[in-house]
Amino acid sequence: MRFIVSSLASHVPDPVTGVRRTPHAKLQSVIDRAVTAERLGFDGYGVGERHGEPFLSPAPAVLLGAVAARTSVIRLFTTVTVLSVVDPVRAAEEYALVDQISGGRLELIIGKGNDPRLFEQFGVAEERQWEALAENYGLLRRLWREEEVTWEGGTRPPLRAVTTWPRPYQEPIPVWHGSATSTLSTDLAARYGDPLFSANTSHPMERYKALVDHYRERWEHYGRAPEDARVGTGFGGLFVARRSQDAFAGFRPYWEATAKWAAGRRGGSTFTSLEDAVERGSLLVGSVEQVIDKIHRYHEAFGNEVVGVGVDLLTEGAQREQLELFAGEVAPVVRRELPSRRP
Image 1: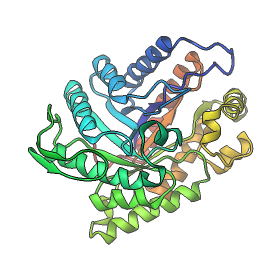
Image 2 (image 1 turned 90 degrees about the vertical axis):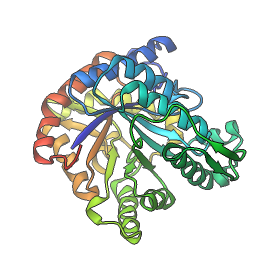
Image 3 (image 1 turned 180 degrees about the horizontal axis):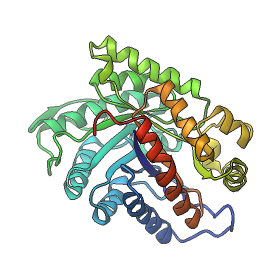
């Protein structure tokens, strides 16, 4: 099993102290957390793309470039790149640059985005979001694999013999497809033979398992070997403690705060309480043994090879404590019991 830490650079008041740091301080914290994740042996660090308050991550390539300069071995993820509204030519250039700076450590996770503000901001009709995602991804693939690309479509002006520069360090940069709500994303991933990354945050396991199962069905439909399908999954939050009671008490202020934020409400969570979210959803809140058991339970359902965790909402001290405890007591057990089949 591979483990990645991800951040959306949420710029919100600390749920415990009420203090809201400056944007500069928050962004420095996001970069510092990547350094900590590498030191602790996590396999990857991800930065998501969000546009508008309360997030400070409209340009993951910029943040990942800063992370690349401060790290040396940890893989760099986008969680996610909103390719439905991003110009694929610009994306090909910027992310190839990050790949070069990092020495070939980049992995893209692409998706259509779930914030309705996106489509108004970027002038993409919401009913065309899936069409735009598929078309833009098809062009991005060609730009990274071919030179002198000639292309015509509906999302941007035509291209005539265009070669983007620089070329990626990797041949090619790995791309995952973010999956949260629709079988259109799972079909797109299977069609191209790419791995799937399940968002797995706001709803019970069954909803996301149905999408993972659809991905595997379509994978075989396109004539691919079942064992070659690859799945990663995020988890809704992390707070592990020696005792379950302490974990719930420690995470509760963060849970209650997110329920009040507009960005949290847009996520459409169906859970009615923290206990409900832990019982029926993916929150990794509990004792070390309970968190390990939950990762196993999701692996049995999804067959995932990657686990993504986020600590972005926690106070600075709690972030470090949680990553250290997870890396020291959870990750080694899971890696031993669920060994990775490939790098």
